[in-house]
Amino acid sequence: GAREVYPDSFIVAVFEPHMPLRLQTFFAEFASALSSADAVIITEPFVPEGRDHEKSDDALLLHKKLTEQGKKSLYVQQG
Image: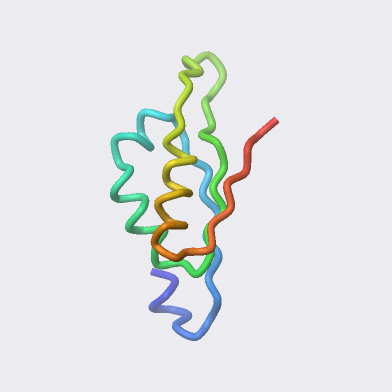
């Protein structure tokens, strides 16, 4: 990952989840991967045109989980 390539750098991850169900299904994996960054910016999930725009708070929960782990995390709502 980025930490291995740039061990002495400040790493910022920007994460725009695609599809709420995918975020929900792989929540633990996303949390683990993002936790290696020094700071994380998370947006609301992107839902393609024609798909159900199901409401989900998982992106916000991911932000809160990372914050609880001591990570600098910013949650950005769209629109």
